[in-house]
Image 1 (spheres, helix red, strand yellow):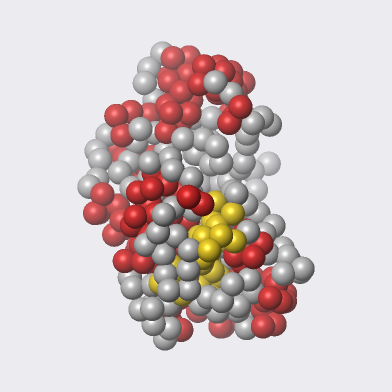
Image 2 (cartoon, rainbow, N blue to C red; image 1 turned 135 degrees about the vertical axis):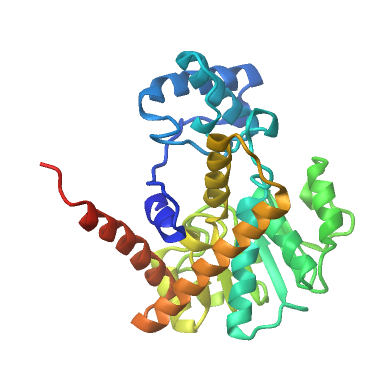
Length: 328
């Protein structure tokens, strides 16, 4: 997926995923550091600023990326900030990286609403997964005039048809207060119930496989923007397409993270860092233009956005392969 995502966004990257099978929530900070450094040492031959550049994903953060960068740098004998992205600012990280994925989701929702002639003012939004991606997308769409009627965490969610107080809720969650104990919240709902509530825009930003053939018929959203990777199964996707739901696929919708990782890498190579406003403007331009390309191609080829996005991603790689030819 990452190969096609990077290709679609015009980034000079391939794609891969990797990790360690463990439960970091049950590990001490010292255990997490030792594991991270050992993992980095084991893959050191295949990573580097000109090889493969790890970036944060589930259960990783700036500290984990700092350990990876330090381990690589100590073994190389020089500081190499460009070996990973998602680092702390002090170690060559980029402004805007923490919010990038959620911000990218909000940008493509705005672009889709504009193309569809769908007013965001008063639009009902549901966000499954109020973590780094979902909370940022919710906040930005709230600022655009949307009514965020439901959000959820790992233990369930809150629903208020009149809208939740997102700025207060974001502050509460940042203060490590349980989402379900938010004082200005609404009725408690399960993650399964949340997906089927009345809304205009649904943002699944939790785990994969949340929208399935079992619940797709009951989903009432007009627009779905996939903040998570693979939240919709192929069977559910077919049902939703038949219902006329406008789906912005994960390969496009959540590409903001890798795009700003690219920005961070570029800044590290130059040792010159951009202002946050410049980063956000560049991200919005790239996300909006990518959406327009995918939408236009989908209409031209008479396919859905997911198929169009993957076709464009594959086409760019294939075109590059043909131009380079085959080395004996």
